[in-house]
Image (cartoon, rainbow, N blue to C red; front, side, top):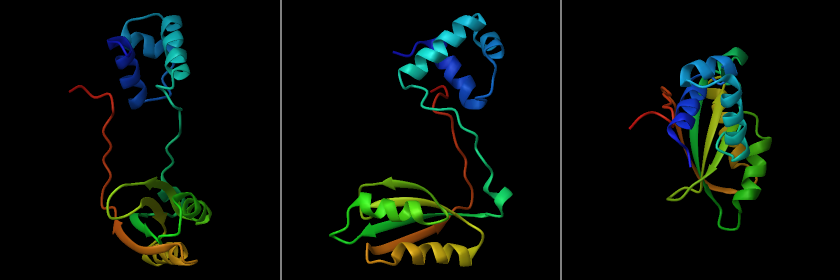
Length: 148
C-alpha cells in the first residue's frame, strides 16, 4: 500500500525524476537514506516502472504528431500488426483497445506527406481493414499522483 510519504515521493518524481535523494528528502521531510530506501522499495514493487528522458521530437525535425486508429482484418492478430508497426518509422506507441477499432497508434512525422507515408505503410500488406487518423493539436499531461 502506498502511504502519504510514498505519494509525496512519487509526486515529486513525476515532476522531476532527476531529483537527488537529498533534494527529495528535503521535500518529504525524511533523511536521504530513508528516501533512497523508499524509492528502491517502490521500484522493487513495480510502482516506479522506470526513469526516462522525454525527448522533444522537434529536435529531429518531427513536428507533426497524430493518432491513428486501426481496424484489423479478421484474420490478423494484434501481435502480427504490432510487429509491422514496430518496423514502421514514425510509430512510437501502439495500444490495443476495445471498441470499433482494434489499436490506437501514436505517430510522429515531419509533415503531412510523412504522415501519409506512415499510413500507407501500415495499410500495405493486407493486415488492416480501416484506419482513422487525427492530428494532435495540443498535448497536456496530468500527473497520476495529483491530489483529488
